[in-house]
Length: 334
Picture (cartoon, helix red, strand yellow):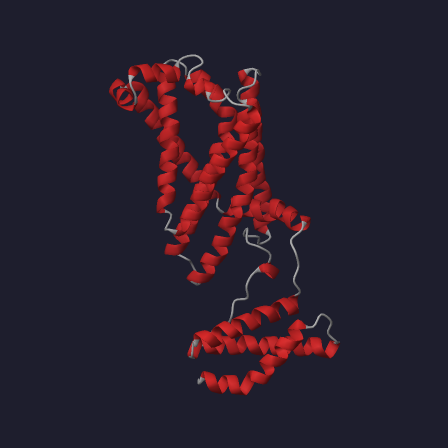
């Protein structure tokens, strides 16, 4: 197919389509004409892409088809309905669909952290390689670094700092998924090592119960959010390798939108975790009450992900944006 011949044959149609796209009000006949010309322009774009992918012509027709699509379907601005739909449908559906990934990561990570903790607690030479004896005593003594960490700054600023740091870790896991998920494994490994070393050092000092009392009120929800981010990142990385029955581009687009969309939901989860870490963990509440609050928050999240998410997934939701906000999948001639 000669691009010049295509332009010569359909230039008038495209010009008419541009005129109709600019009009705010259309008669019934003009609306029908707009739809017909939009469909024809879509077909022209598919033919050019398949047989004669001239860059300038593809760019022109892509812009024209996008404008015509907006005119046909109607543009809309995001509002509270979109926010409500995200938190009641899209986010829980994405959590449920990726549950095998993040639950598996949670299990493996916790087992690995326990192994690291045992290794540090039972091997003095390992502890000596981490810090000097004086530094270890300072970290693990009553009122030391591990304990003072949660109470040596104003609660509000501490909550903001914790939230920003954890949201950044989660964002790295989500974005790094496109690199086959390999950087995600490194982020998760660092998380496991930090947790395991802390547990091991406090256990060696006979203060593991205090450490768990400080960790669990916020750590249950915080670690779960990190595991979810890691699971979604690895799932996206696996999509690059195995897109399944979908074309790789379409699969990456769908899974990528769902993965990046998780950032907002996980930011909200981590905000709750940060509030718990700043206001509940260092509070004067009994240990059982603090852990109970953290356990309640974790239970509510799991119910949200696995029960509400299952209902959303059962009706075909995948965590993607609404159909009206997705790009059309253009037919391609063989």
